[in-house]
Length: 434
Image (cartoon, rainbow, N blue to C red; front, top):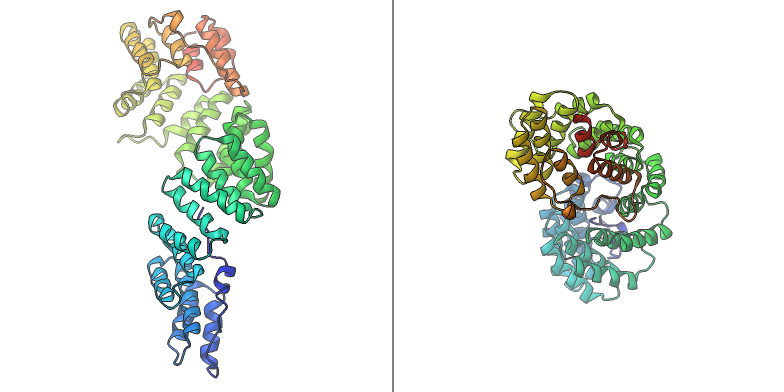
């Protein structure tokens, strides 16, 4: 979240537009500072105005700052920084120039260099919240989350009614693995600005992490009604519906997301799993297999495609896919287990047992892996078998998986197949062992 320069920050320089008696220069100066004008035209106007004779230092300062912002808006961050450098020579104690140069450095992908400008701005104007807010953003980009949270706290002390500070704070807390406090930060932002989509969408993502999909869906309904063009929003709502075991609704949302972002592999995987949840294995095969070239692919995609291939009786394709997955990620427990199930189908019990045992060694705490491995003939000590899900606050999808695992561990294949977990390794094992 990088703040764009607001007109207020630029205009607080409070300078005269142009020298008296220079009508054309005055017109250029006005055009230079008009943020509604396209950046290239502003740059040209600023340059013409700066070429005028007898500019006062204040006028030159104003025009340099305006051109710097125009350059920054244009994406020419190096020349924006150069103009701020020149302006700072004229006004070395102006905190606004320091802050805005830091913002230009951030826009140019230089957060470490921006820190010094934010430090200077905070030193020159310690009661101003923006240097702390912007420094927090830079520190976040640098992975210094604890320091970023301190700056967000200071910014809130100085400006407690700025919703965007709470949004930034929530982002850091969410990334730090503290979803409960992140949710509280987004709630504060929305209390101040209920019209903001960004914190509402992020709040929904946090609710999902807290296993509260039923609360996430209404938030996303509201955001999507106003802004249906963002694939991430469709994907997030699809994930919430998936956790609610609404696989039809999830597939529809993932389908919308994929239309908007056809190259997004995560969305394609999500859609594949939703189609498996519906029971449309052929649809899942079409969704995923078309993206898997003969020159390789990601192990996750290959493993999922191998599962679908087994479900659709494409044994040869399944073997090729899963062996490629194992080659790419030799320590992948799921890939090894899919390989074990394939070998079991091919009447190769010894190799199947070995692959299953290897999968268990890769994921000894995974109850699903253990249950499937036992079905594949691996010797699993009942005393060491991890307990099946659900988690303390389980979603319908998690409960369905737990039901499948429990049934599989009890050799009740019919119950495992009946559990609403058609996207799972557990369900694949139950189906293949009718």
